[in-house]
Length: 183
Image 1 (cartoon, helix red, strand yellow):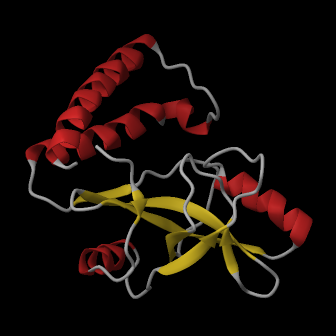
Image 2 (cartoon, one colour; image 1 turned 180 degrees about the horizontal axis):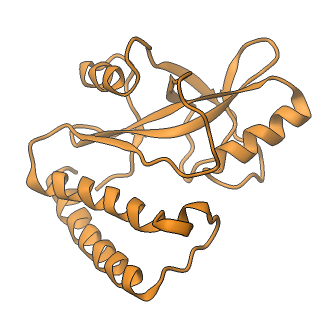
Image 3 (cartoon, rainbow, N blue to C red; image 1 turned 120 degrees about the vertical axis):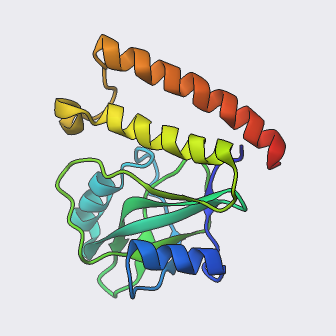
């Protein structure tokens, strides 16, 4: 299956999904200006450091991603608002995008713990539903008990490691199958 891309701000599925995640707030396109050399996907630390260097403030919300026609997801995210009020996504990603779709969420706070993505299938397909379940279960395993407060490379206890490996194997098989079904 393809990697997720920024969701389309005008697509009806995106609008409906965003209203479920944060009611009465509209998503906005935010220009991507990754900080050179910063760690990929480490938005909270990157934005905090950027504020220290350039002023401005952090804006919490959700980056909205999709695999078109397959699923959509909201990833808890932090962007930088410069002193003039212009928002930028300063976090590097494995793939570069000119813009991301960002859904501000002023009801959220960041406590240092991971927040699971909100995911929704865009197609009625048991394999997609199962793949989304496995994504949620991976998050749960990686954030069990004290693991929720660990960063970087995490070593799982043997029982969780065994379950995690089984989930990863199944997710990979589904990925291949879904990649053929949704090229």
